[in-house]
Length: 170
Image 1: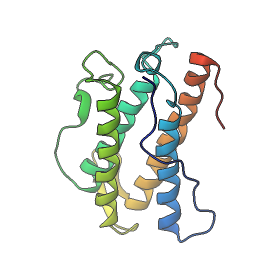
Image 2: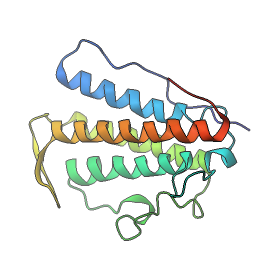
Image 3: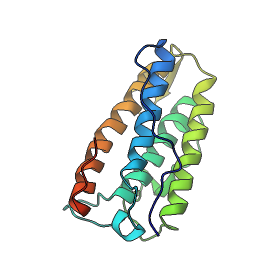
Image 4: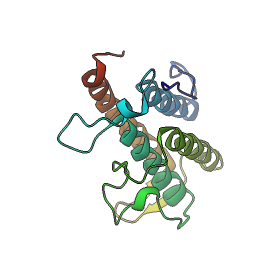
């Protein structure tokens, strides 16, 4: 069976208030990441084609962890452990041996996105939160940082997808 994304493709808003624009960019990248898996089997999504542990499946898990760290831990200030053993197990998100499968990990990803949306919705862009390494950061800064994480990893996903089956995505 091949993968179909549960997130609809969306374009970022070209004209909007700042918050709506930031959220639309983030949602566009979230959907874009899953679009890279469209039509692939679970084995293909987990295929390692690079010297690193990077796979499309692993990128889904990694960005689930990113959502948790920045929204749950930093913005909400909760002490819930991050998924996949982070930070003690630095590559746990990319190691698929303990995974319940692509569908389960995508469901966790989608749930993390929904939780992140709920957490961010109750905060002003100018609210300040504390990050253990960076110090004080604004909600605006966190949204921009997470957008940059997605942009970087969606680029990685494009390359991995092309290596899997030659598909190039725009």
